[in-house]
Image (cartoon, rainbow, N blue to C red):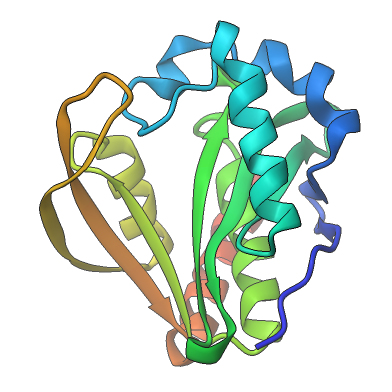
Length: 194
């Protein structure tokens, strides 16, 4: 598996590999405290630069590829998503650190982003895509199931949030041989929204 930073694009979204030119446009989007209510790190307000710098540093180290997400209908930046824990020897990566502005939630943006991110991952030789979320994040869990990802289980008290409480982490995956059905489902959802 060889996964390198690249612009990912389809009819609905454009995902650009994160770089410092995205910082100031992303800062006000990340100010929404709802985005960070269930995360392990905080990226709003005074915490934004440290979070953004971490996204850039992990990308430079080759362990993550972050993306600034643009909605094609408006041209506006609407969020962030990344490949995490990239493991070429095991042909897998996680898709995470996904968040959207309130105006983009529940729209074509998330299925279009997952179509682009998963498509690229499997094109690059992945056998497995992983997704995880906080046990309390029912909206994210519902989106993963609706997309066709398989629920794998819950790791109880697996990590700490930025507030210090222990979170249960709910895991999902999509395997390479499941991708054609997941892709068809995402494309059908997007066609219905057009």
